[in-house]
Length: 172
Image 1 (tube, helix red, strand yellow):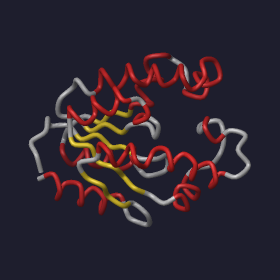
Image 2: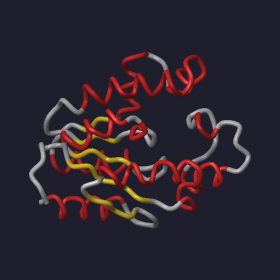
Image 3: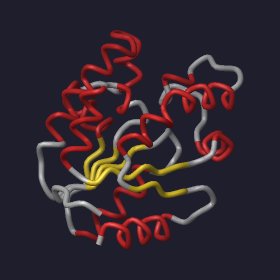
């Protein structure tokens, strides 16, 4: 694989395991773990659903862009991004230029098992057919995840440590 800055950025849909895998990976590598959603919440002092309520998805995406710009400037980190972080071209560029991008692939069926509609998942609020909404999101996002991924790892039915092992094997 080509030489990259010493960062690992995890991308993928909600429920793919980005945060859990990221925490484990960072612990093993002895580097800081960051989560772009948590960074947005830290900066604003409110949760993401509140931002969606007050500013809509566009307002949230701008705050997410600012967080990703700052986080990708760091070195020797593992970063879990939000599922929609790849929607903005500038985020895709920053991620791909500043570290290894790992796409955690998961099926819509696995996502539907892992995520529950509710306040913490603004894009699923008021959605009657969760699987249909997740499919709709994947149709748009999968090509974007794939376009910047240095590595794609399937996570369906797999333990975190197995996914982490595959990532470490591939990047070393």
